[in-house]
Image (tube, rainbow, N blue to C red; front, side):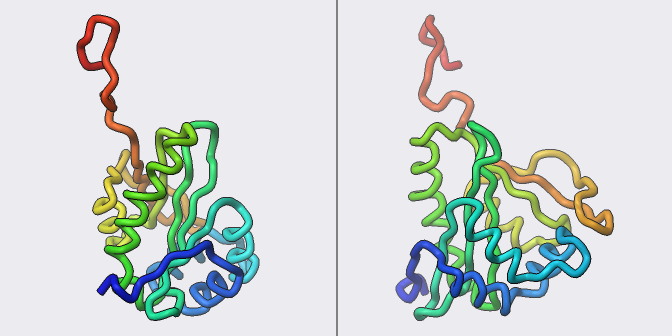
Length: 170
């Protein structure tokens, strides 16, 4: 039901709401990356201030916050956190990401986007794959307790419509 889904730049209120109502797997993935005793409010503020942050609302309530931040001059880091209503906005978020955000950042010169995800967070892997990401490499230790993570990347196709000087696809 994407007709009840709206998008906007996220506010501290949106991020705070989602952080307070995180899905269990998103909470697990988040907590294992934070220092012991780190506050969720601090993380929410850091996410909001570290790059471009968006909110997907379902019936005017924040269901998912997601964002991007530059890792370097060519790659953006992607992240997303959601509430129990994430499933209600997931397909709209994929569409928004693929048709608006990816072209927007590619136009700015970024040719890749990258996200890390807890290896057991299969729901996150599904939406990343649905939006065109590919898993890169095997699981690796990344969490505070040595939890295994996977890296997913969105990358321009190798040819991207360009050709070499002899006209063959590069």
